[in-house]
Length: 193
Image (cartoon, rainbow, N blue to C red):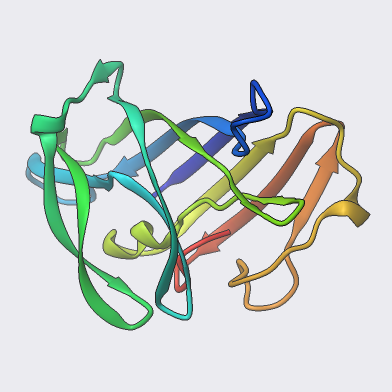
């Protein structure tokens, strides 16, 4: 994959009954077919926003309003695909569509969807899954994940837990309401940022 840029824009709950923030996600992927022939492949993307710890599911949220290149996909576009989670193969729900990859050319795929944050006690937690990139040849050459929060954020108010980009500290920056994680030549070994 040549490039991946994701922006998750969060909104606070609309009333006291709801306790999840809602999020609108936009993702742009640029992939290059290095082969000599055009390829037309069936591509899939997880249909659930699942959060795992040690391979155990601790929260599942539906992804809604899923669009690929501006086209809204329906429940009829969902299927079950195998995925490796916590070292074990499991079946997950996924949206599927045909995608053309012309030989020796870069193809841009734009995805949009809505989801929710998780909440534990008085803390919200947010994840973005990068592990799906394991199925593409080579690393993600350049990438960025932006979390745009409803209020300004300070670096000391962020608790980064779980797998990180490089196996060490999280390489994030904050500016106003935005947390940005950037990476180059990233080979996804973990499931989330």
